[in-house]
Image (cartoon, rainbow, N blue to C red):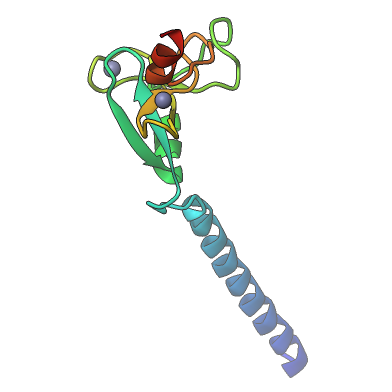
Length: 128
Ligand SMILES: [Zn+2]
Ligand SMILES: [Zn+2]
């Protein structure tokens, strides 16, 4: 075998090996690309029983991919709204929550039926 050809083959093998490693690293990294940063969370609350939790981006992604966890019912809710199954009362009424600036309490931002909600305490005070 001429030395030049040998070098070309060797180079090809090295390039393929590197490419494979890079692909492997990339695809492995792809799974970890969602940050599991406890300081960047979204808050979720059950409309029915009041159970609430903070989720990191990664945990939220896990919820989305857990079979049966996410309710997909575009006829009932805004198609973009995510409604999850509550682990406590076992109903699909866990919705995104917001914290009231006045009362510092968490409340459901949009009901599981797609209705916009305000802090219940603020609403009560306004009715007075
Ligand atoms: Zn619940
Ligand atoms: Zn309030």
